[in-house]
Image (tube, rainbow, N blue to C red; front, side, top):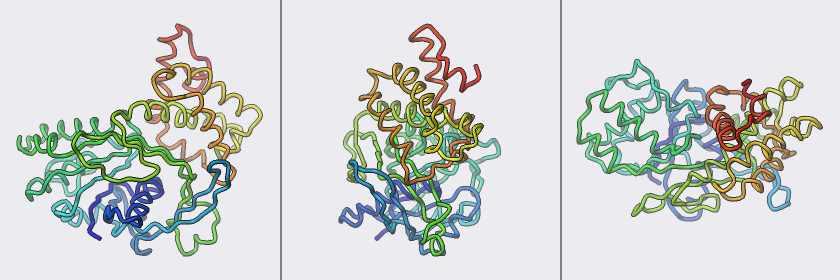
Length: 367
């Protein structure tokens, strides 16, 4: 199979999410192609994947339709894993390939931040947007057609935001006007919403000795992708929903599920807990989280998305998944950037809608 997907981000999430979906689709004869993963900082994961022949295990554990799920899948959709700092020439070579069709990314909520040191001559630039711009510029210079850009970062209208950032950099770098027009018109930018709890490498598993890249996730998955009129769908999969507006999916998931994670983390760690499950099962923290979700978050998004109350009930059940250890330390990473997206908008909208202060959100945010 040809290498058709360039992926920025070597972390556990995409490997248990989009990469696994591509594996399924390839097995079913959709012939999506192979994925080349780029690790933006360091080379540890790229090296480990290379040692494994880019095959790794995904352990799915939890409840699905009331039934216990505990199965292992081998993901074989990745062909290569490259380290940007040492193998940038290979990344640019793929950018020029006529087989390349799609770019995936997951660089966290802070991944769109720029680096003042980046220039058009950096090889590679430090920031993800500048890396992507350089890849697209290389492709444009090679006379190849535009690409489908599918970012998976938890940012509202993520593709539109990313495109605007790239155009801004291109103007600052005084790049060719024809190239800027190509970015905006020849590339297809798909807003997305991703939803799956991925806990990463477990402390113990029989396969860990042979596969240090093994990762654990829940069975539930939702990948909402906003369609671009006239553009063929990239993939068909039970977890993928193609929609004309991804924003209601984004609003519901980020405010309730991610907001719940970021809301409970400090109180849970202060009580000595290490996992989301144990925190939610605590006789004080569990009801506290329910009040946060049902009294202060659900009421401000009702009418703006489908069944937020039912989704919140489902989220609490997912948090209590007895089969996966979702570490609170993972939730705490980039906490200050996360709350800007996950909690602060809910706090501000609550005050605007009800004219009173949301006591739990104020407690969480210290204001």
